[in-house]
Length: 464
View 1 (cartoon, rainbow, N blue to C red):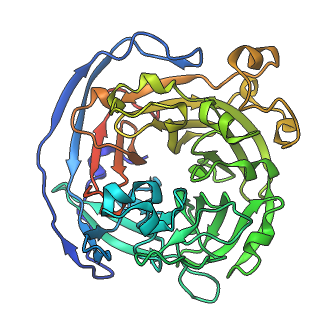
View 2 (cartoon, rainbow, N blue to C red):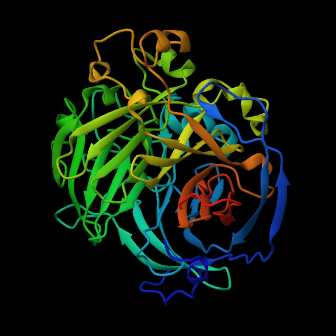
């Protein structure tokens, strides 16, 4: 990694122009001294007794406007690009460079239409409370690169829209597949047609050859993407290839079949690349619905897969146990803190088999350091959907009897101890041995939230 003095050099000029509006420049630095929690949330968590002083500084992010959408009742929403679904940086990137990723585009939960757009569910979604309203169904998921200058301003200098092999841009609409995917509606409440090439990107990495790997939620699936944004191939769970039979790229059913049991809107959310670029680490946002949705709602057990990048073969699977939902104190918002609200939103490789992992609900986030060890490995027999009891179903004592041990977690950062950090942090990039950049997902401004980026300097180096 480069020294911190070399990280924040000025960025280059724009390669492509955008409508930039509403830039707010925040110049301040906050310092804090925090006592971290003294009690362990579970046996797999190691809390440090005290965290020395650390610093956090906001980075001014441009607001990339997508325009105003007006609904039939006159409700207007000013949409902006949500570039914070994931963040990534390699040691060879230019100083201050951070790669960013959008998800599928603006979408509104059909159960939230009354609050967000003033329309009853019956008006907006034909009574379907599990669907989504897509204000811009033609939105193209994209990759950006921002360069943070010495003035602490992030300038967007690279824009890469994703496209199929024909050159046609991809959309964020789901494929058609036996009720596995959410129904989508336009602002006129009419159904939006599916897209066999559509993706919902949530995490990505960039290789030294300039290509990308993207993890997305719909399949869930992994996509290898050329430097210009062309999808070269898509890896999907075994048995799902028919859902993507008309996709504008090659589809290979190489991933374990049990991944098909992902809960709605809880597919892949974390993706990391080993420093030697030989392996991908991929993780679901939440537990599998194995064997059913009730198990998903109460389980704390997530799977992390280690995949050989060249062959797509799974070479290891590991057990991760997220914190109890009740421990996320900042999310006391009147809603029941059900366990399924705890998600993993990002993973970053610190070394081979050494990861930084982001757990959160909405307002409260925690960063953990974890290492993959043989004792945390999950036998391949648990990849059989018919095997029971499943990993997600078992309680801690049952795991112990089977010799299954969750990965040990060392707390690196708790957002409750860092005044000013935003809610819904989804992107984390390693800028230097002791420095991170974090960015929130603004959900495209649907609820009036802006994209926020912060530099966080840790008191101890993550990388030595």
